Amino acid sequence: MTAVYAIQGDTLDAVADRYFKNNSVDMLPALIELNPELDGIFLAEHQAIKLPEPAQAQTAQTLKLWD
Image (cartoon, rainbow, N blue to C red; front, side, top):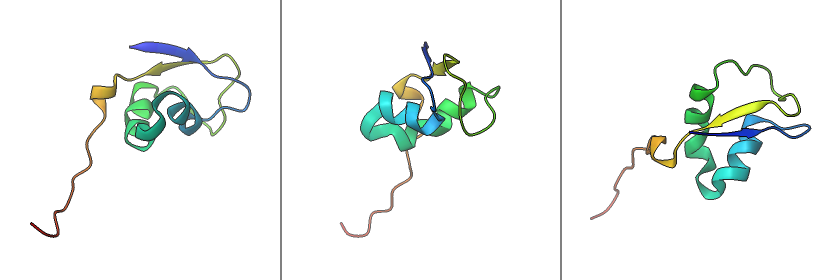
């Protein structure tokens, strides 16, 4: 598990986008779960945030329409 520090005006979704790029939507629930002490929309500058491992993301259930 890696820790990073928030920059001015950061939010958890901005952190997810910065570190997980194309997988940020899938990683956001794991990020929130690892950081239950974070409340509010904006993070404090230099606040430590624990990043989940990419394997911790829950895969979305898919629906196959055609074979």
